[in-house]
Length: 233
Image 1 (cartoon, rainbow, N blue to C red):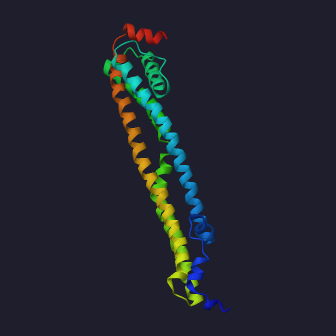
Image 2: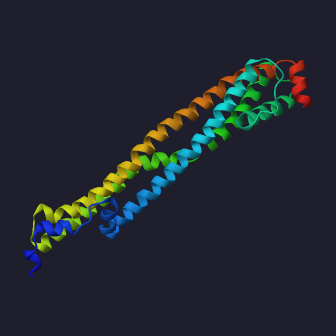
Image 3: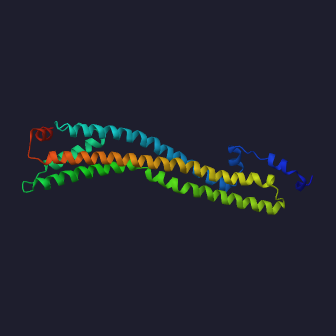
């Protein structure tokens, strides 16, 4: 039988239009784009779940740090995580006193030490967020590249087969558009997660900074019972 005489419906039926079928039948370049996007999606979700766990712990530490600072009680050197590093930095700076410096200078130095420790911890919290931002901004364009490449191949097949019926070209175009769909599936959650997690990190940092100002003022005072107790520990 002449291939050109095969009904268009039979040609379309020969293509599996399921997601797996669209992937397996795609051009190697389009298939590579799909694989890249799936890997990026898995990496993004790994970052999201890891950040959810770490930020939940950081929020608890921020609340404990705030409660300790506002209580005006003895400075707790047993704080964990971010709070522990901030308290340690503050006490180390407090112990390293210069008799010639004023209280304002001492307070500024202590706060600077605590904010430096906080900055390092915040950078650790932000690790992985650039991946979400990059995936969110580039995944649609990577998927679009796969789509454009696939459509180019479809038009090339049209020119060779001399058949412009929709049933013939639809499978190839569907495979190409599937790449864009995957790109959007990667990008939308990545952007949403990046905005949410970045906001959480900023709120945690703001909470610690406000408490650092209070704790720095306390540590900058003349030696008192609370400070001596903390230093002894």
